[in-house]
Length: 268
Image (cartoon, rainbow, N blue to C red; front, side, top):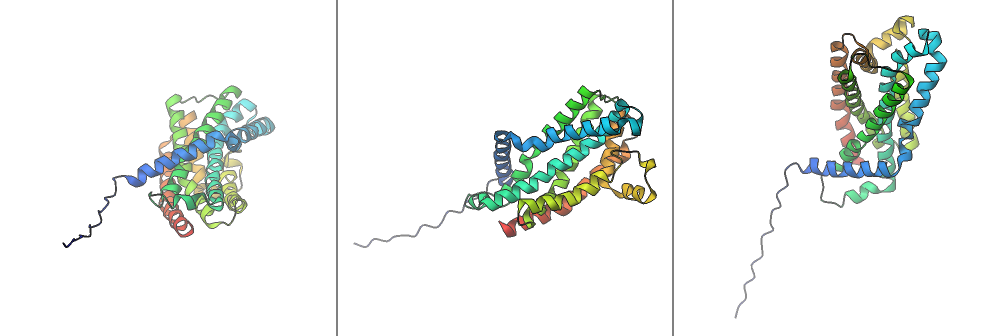
């Protein structure tokens, strides 16, 4: 009696549609829960911005605008962009920390898209943008700020700032992949944030600045976002600044997101 054993052909597993998107959203939820369970991670987008707002308004308001109320109307829409960029910096720091702790080594053993942990972490940090927006606008309202152009225009300004900050966050993600420690990521990030946020008309009108600084303002992408926020919240022609902000954001995303993903794959 002969027994013939046929070797079963291996079944070909068909990849599920939108697998990378689903995996990224699932890991984004993980990042969100991680942030909610450690609320002290949100100090840089809650307490610190409010302290800066109080210091600037009551220290410089009378000298720059003649009154603290007028200066609050001038600085808050611009400071919103600065707060968002500081919030996006933490994305790179947190990613670098997770890689050092070996979290991403565990993800590699799972049947998920290779880039899903990176994309999920970036998406999960959207909670920081929401908290920063709510705390800044809510506290500004208590101090007396009013969006004279209406609620929906102010909401559009907040959404524009969040979208732009998300695009810029890929710069800090790249830093997180290249730097050797979280402290190094912070150092590199501040080298970018300081000239982009303080080299603007955030604290003083553009016309009061020297010519060389005005030249920098004309090419500074964050200045476009601040101009768009002021126009949307307080009135004025917002079309040019909004389109310029979106164009700059798309440029950051198209250049730095592929570089960050490539650096992530080489490191993780």
